[in-house]
Length: 518
Image (cartoon, rainbow, N blue to C red; front, side):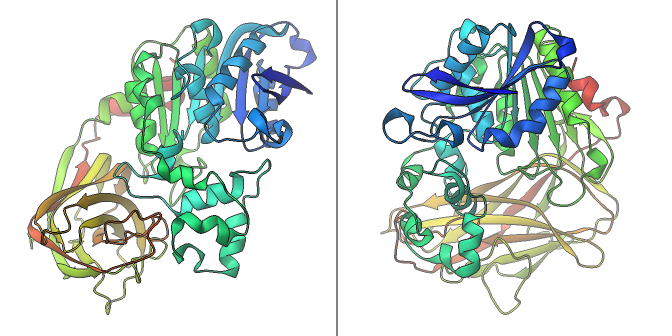
């Protein structure tokens, strides 16, 4: 391994080059990983790629770690330079004597964004010409763009995850993954103080770009431009990843050969929460085999892939099963299948919000509508998008609606299944208005065992995972005044819609490696 500094506009980026073992001299396809998390953290990954015959380039993005530079265009500005810097790096790699000209851009999380915009461009940079773009992309758990990671598609602000990322990586040349946890240990109510915009003051260090995270509005430019892409894509995600919806949208819209690998994983691609060991695969071998097929032009056209069904050892073909499934409707007013335990009237009080980190229910607090289904008389396979329809009222001009789905086993143990959000607004002069609210609960892929009951919670907050809606009509990021909001969920016309799939067909079962790499 040797370290070089690759010239890009206004800066030079620290780059480690790993070549295959001496016995594999010559020119090789190259894997390019551009990361803000420190190129040293990818050494084992780079060595694994090199052992399989790839030249590997691992680069610290502009302003980070070995590429840190104070002042001017060399500073770290998340999402600002990745398309142009990626294009320049691809161009540089293709001129190296060890490169055969074929390049696979690889990355996870922010690094996946770096890989993707090297193909699609970003809001200021058009897609590069084919000679300056990667030949294939592996994007694992892609977190796509500034506004995309700050807000849910509903517009609701993600708080805990964004505070943690920016405390660890924002406006600094190095990383401190424990920064927020250390501060929360000292001051557990840190995230409850208002306004959200002044969080850097409470963290004790400047974060000048923090405010801009919230000023941005959601623009799925990478996904919007995906249809024009012609290179192969391998999109990797997890059903417990907060960006799973983006992973699926990217795969569906990609214009070139697209493959999907989705397991029962969180953002770190580990089992999170619950069962996942049954779906362990040799990721390194799968990635390398796919990359070889992509570089050789051996992948068949179209969108194909696999999804793991948690609670079983099986993988299912994504292109045949994902859109298919019978919607199992749990109507809130159907006493034969659902019981109303609390509500339907409750008080959403931002001073005492429903907690995202606690599945316990306080029977003395009327802070949510609470329903529970009858025990399943047979296992239920869920594979596809879930949602809830609410006929609901709020007494405040702006209201957030959270639906949390929890599985209760025969002993009453609780496990989270899904959570979704929606935001409604109306002119302040109007009284409470009845409306139908659709809450998307994301993509589910799991088997619910016999005797499972589902607990359905409808609340006005989900804190600290999400910022509290102040109910005043003010921006939740700058608001300093909070007001309670009285809610009514009408059971008539409200329902939980689940993708109860029929998965007994033998031809739907797939081998991950074979499905992805052909």
